[in-house]
Length: 113
Length: 113
Image 1 (spheres, each protein chain N blue to C red):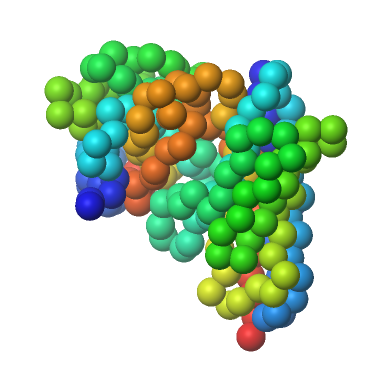
Image 2: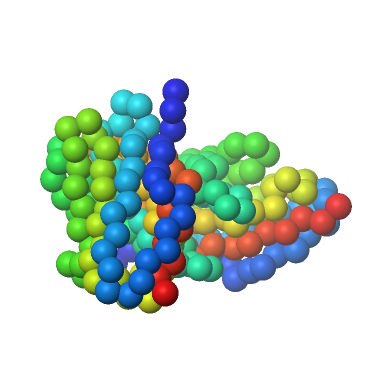
């Protein structure tokens, strides 16, 4: 079945540092890929998405590129802020409209001033 | 435009009891999915409802059941609660044809003692 593997956390960075959170997936066909963010005590918010190979999703300075050849969707940000501290989840959805989301285990990011 | 709402926010139950959680989807959405998020883990898909029917189900026992009402709101019922059912229960809504793009509510924190 479909699965997502993300880098183990926690990740601790200083403000303005570069962020990379690795995500690889296993899926049949052409899944859609997502990054969700969960702030303390809250539900999940969609951060960005990519629905086909070579697409780049971007939002709030975060980017991720759908790489089918390496089955990866790594999250990057050039300069993190304290307010980016949260748990980040990589997820995929199979082909077709009515598909469930399959999540990775999450990576906790802490950004220190 | 109200987003996805869930009630209650927190709940404490005893082993063997039954619980009902409620979800109202984002305005215009017709599909509701439920996820269980154990502490420190990614969300796991429980089931999805559309047109008042269960359309997909994850690897959860029959103790977990649900319902969708004509106004698209939904309930999740869990019978014979186990300690292992303690988790954050997330509801997500979407359009059925584009149900990979899901919007999450803040969740209900269930503690089973």
